[in-house]
Length: 252
Image (cartoon, rainbow, N blue to C red; front, side, top):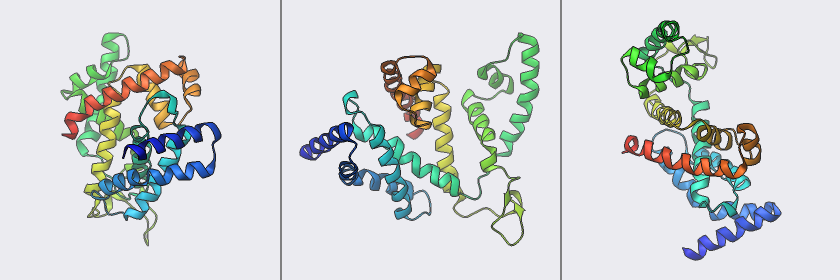
C-alpha cells in the first residue's frame, strides 16, 4: 500500500512537470478504486447504473489531476474526492426530472420579502441573514436552505415544463417518481454543503467557490479575491477543515 502511494505521488509530480497524457492515464488507473468507491456509495442512493456514475467520476478525477499541485502537501485522495463526487452529483442533478421544493419554503420566501423590506426601513440598512431568520422565527440553517432552494428554482420548480412527454405538463401535475426521494437526498446534501459554506468567512468562502466550484486556477482565484496564491491555499485548507467540522454532526 505504501509503495502504491509512493508510486502515485511520483506520477503526480511527473505530470506536474510534463503534463504528459500517458502519465495522466497512469494516474487515472492508479486511482480507479477511489472513483469506484464513490460511485458505489452514491449508487446506493439512486437508480443510476454504476458504469454511468463511474464515467462521470473519471471526468472529475482528470480535472483533479489537472489542478493538483503536489508541492502543496495535500493528500491527492482528499483533493480529488470533491471533484469526483461533484461530477457525479452534478450529473444526477441535471438528469433528475422531478425535484420538489417544500411548500413551507415557498411561503417563507414570500414572507421574507416583506420582512426584509420592513427591517431595511427600521435598521436603515439591508438586514443580515440571521436577522431575517429571527424575524421569520426559524433557524439560520433553515433560512439558508430555503434561500438556496429558491435560488435554484429553475432546476427544481414545480412550474417547469416536462417536454419529453406526449403533451407538455408541469412537474406539479405529474405523479412523484418512485426514486425522487433518493435524488432529493442528494440535493439536500448539496444544500447542506452550501449552507455550511455560508458560515465561512467571506474570503475563505470565495476561495472555495473559485477553486472547487468554478474550477479557477489558484493564481486567477487570488487575483479575483485580491489576495496572494499562498493565502488562497491557506484559506482552502482552513475552509475545508471548518466545513468538515460543520458538516460532521449532520452526517452523523
